[in-house]
Image (cartoon, rainbow, N blue to C red; front, side, top):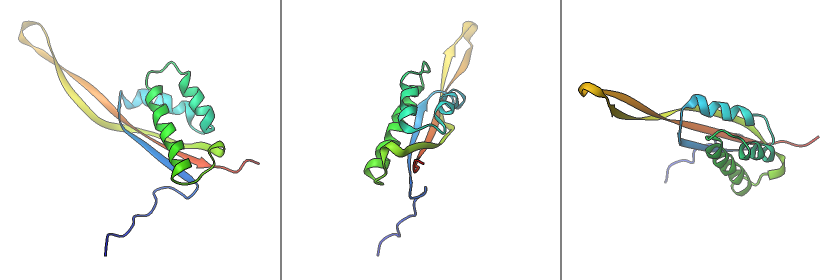
Amino acid sequence: MGKAKSPRRVADNEALAVGTTIRGSAQKLNLVAELIRGKKAEEALNILAFSKKAMARDASKVLASAIANAENNHDLDVDALVVAEASVGKSITMKRFHTRGRGKSTRILKPFSKLRIVVREVEEA
């Protein structure tokens, strides 16, 4: 008598990975996510490896995790994987302050973002 197993959040031919606290704004991370949406997984890793964007390193870690989940947990073919989804959202925001002149201070916001990547196995025609 245990808790019932929860259903999968993605289809049988898909695998999921989520990066929950990626340092940087969601707007900047979305620029990186746009580079890999709809691309083959191997091509997307190459795009991220040679991108000049600083957030591309974190995005490539999440993509590599999604590929590893597909291979090890769901027995999907790595060569047939495509980035089906790459969605970005806001996460926590660290609040800091910066002392200014005349006894005043200003607020510094350090945002974090979430990245959700879904890879799908497609049959090559």
